[in-house]
Image 1 (cartoon, one colour):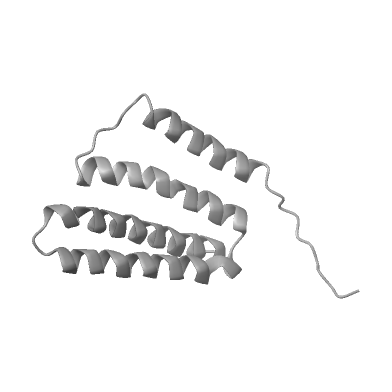
Image 2: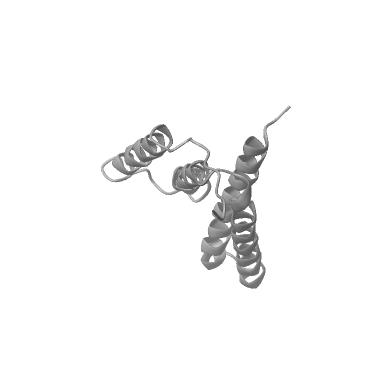
Length: 121
């Protein structure tokens, strides 16, 4: 049904989303009465996100994982605009989004896709 690479990328994207939620929770600490709980929840999610990122490294192509992780910038912008009420500055944010997308497409387009057999000989 799904290839193993697709499942690994899905897990990596979930980890990226958890990391973004963690950063939002940690930023909300200043505006909340339950500062300890929010900060601790954010820290736990950030650690979980990092552990998941490291755990999926051996199971997928690193080019795909790096491009997938680069989309965290895009998710971070969307989450900060909708969840935190920050403004999208077209002068600075739009070129950053465009460069991130161009970098992801270029990295995947020119990636080495040949499989190499590594032996001791």
